[in-house]
Image (spheres, rainbow, N blue to C red):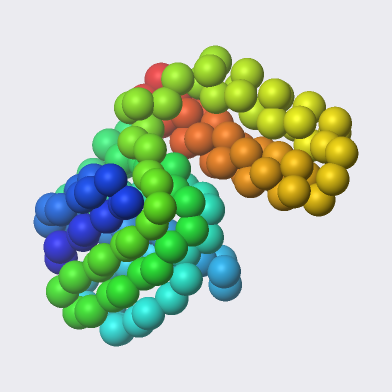
Length: 140
């Protein structure tokens, strides 16, 4: 089936895949060929892609995504998000430092606007950190 991941900056991936795991507001879903048609909301989290049926977890491809929209047909998956960071482009040490800075920002927030911004950054960097850890664990 074809998987297309589109961000505000353009298409991140557009290729044939065997399985895609996507975080939704109802929990993570795994999408395989001939999946029932579905439109759902994606939440910030990790998207995992298995390109071939026989690929082990060490070959999974990971993206850290912001929330967005999922459209599934029997032969295609379209995931539209604001941003998606490929696991190979995430440096674990940098993500950890950014996560800690975001936690401090949340602690130091003086009003609701600052608190909301800090929560968004905490969530973003927590997802990026999870992708980096998954990538290290499965390839390390």
